[in-house]
Structure formats: structure tokens, C-alpha cells
Length: 196
Image (cartoon, rainbow, N blue to C red; front, side):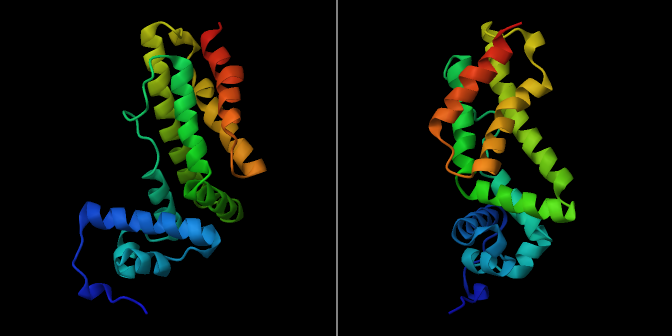
């Protein structure tokens, strides 16, 4: 039985967006990207389809926004007091995200991007933008502590950890082993950032 959203208490703003994001993530986990529809998200969120389409004209935009809402934001990255442990914590969070609905979304969005090309630029901005900002935060703290020479900080070095995790995820699928995060940090990132 379909619930008539018009008879439910009205939600607006953040409360409505949060319900829609959660419904999107739940649909991704249950049905995968291919099975996700705006209608099912609206029903699960107890919202109207019109409210979804007003904010997100396509499911690509809805999924990207729902996933972006789950990512670590700059300012919320764990501060353990040293570069290595900060990197393990940050990439551990990325590993968990790729093993859940965010990973399912990434696979679906990449498949759609490769066939149509349309969301590719937006995906690139999202993945490099947020990942690089959180990595910059971790590395900047290490610079301030004297662990990293500021000249060692380059865009490619900042992108390396996330790129290696995404590569493993795309070619091997979930789950991503915990030890891979430690290997990326110890064998790649710490040497890249701390050796001249």
C-alpha cells in the first residue's frame, strides 16, 4: 500500500533533505544503482515525486548529492596528532564509504558516465574536490607539526591515496580490506610526503 504523502506532517528544508538522502542511500543498498528510481525514493522518504524533481531533475544529481552528504567534510577529519594515523583514519573512512551505498553509487555513476559522458565533469569535481580538501587538511596539520615539508605537498600526492582506493574498489569490488589502507599509507603516502 502506497502512503499518501499529502496526509503526513509537512517537512521542509533540512528535515526533508535528510529524509530523501537517507531514502536514496537505503534504495542504493537494497536495489543498487540500476534499480534505484525517483518514485521509490519518494515513497521511502514519504515525499512527493515533485519535491524530488524540483531539487534534483535527474537521479544522477540526486545520488551524487546523497553520497556527497555522507562524506567527511573538511573540518571533521580526525586529528590523531600524527600524519600516519591521520591518513589511516581518513582513508579508513573512505574505505567504509566505498564498501556501502556510496560505493554502489560510484559504480553506477561511472557506468552511466561512460555510456553518456554527461555526469563525468561533475563527478570529477566532486571526487577530487572533497577528497583533496580533506587530504589537504590532514597534510596541513602535519606541515604545521613539522612532519612534512610544504614543498612536498602537490596535487598529485594529495590525490594518490583516494585514487588507489578507488582503483582497488573498481577492479576488485567491495569489501576493501583494512590492511590495504595501512599499506597505502605506509608504502605510498607517508614516503611521498615525508621524503624529499
